[in-house]
Length: 324
Image (cartoon, rainbow, N blue to C red; front, top):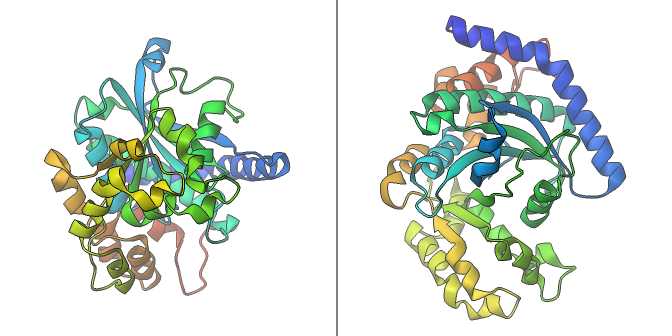
């Protein structure tokens, strides 16, 4: 481990009690309030002036379980920051972790390490970006909502304990998602309180917000990936949203299809290819079995070092200092 990385790891370990307290208070408060919440925990290269904040036009949002962050996450970010064609003006990246999941319960004991690896991932990403992208601010934050529409409302409504609005210019939100996640965005079962159900998305798309979707390649090591069809099948599905009559009957507005971008189109393809075949499941399995060379191949430097140093996914029962 390099001296610089060792210093970063040591500094982050010293911050664990503060981060843990912030996470616990956020979970407790949002549970009591019963409304979507948002809390900014840390910013890498924060905006130095109010003018910069007011000039922000696009907030790219990578919302994931970060269990742990991987090179696939890095690929999504690099693709968007360097190659998204439809967004101009100043940009910012938000790494967002939800304390609630729409499909499964989350283990609060893992939250501190997910946040820690997110911070190290953000630092790694920032140093890998050349100018002008290298000056972009990267936020690490929490939300209490599992639904994209509510997450955006929480950010816009500032359900936060921060003393100032981190996004006063009300930028366009562009969520960076994998194809499998995007299919859940379109699933009516998540919007049962709306009639028709997909009308729940009207506020999101009506405000000009967008999605940028990474197609999911078939992976022989992951049989579940075949359920999404080929990448060409996925592309046709996304491009067909502008004429989808079935979704239209459930509240989908065909014009919203114009607000869906496909990651990797154009010059961004090399970044998306770099993330193919990488999954958090592979990383957890490799870490649990002590295959550290493989972990390093699938994670950024800081995230890989934290996973090893803290024994985050150890299957031996060994717990290192700071590991909850």
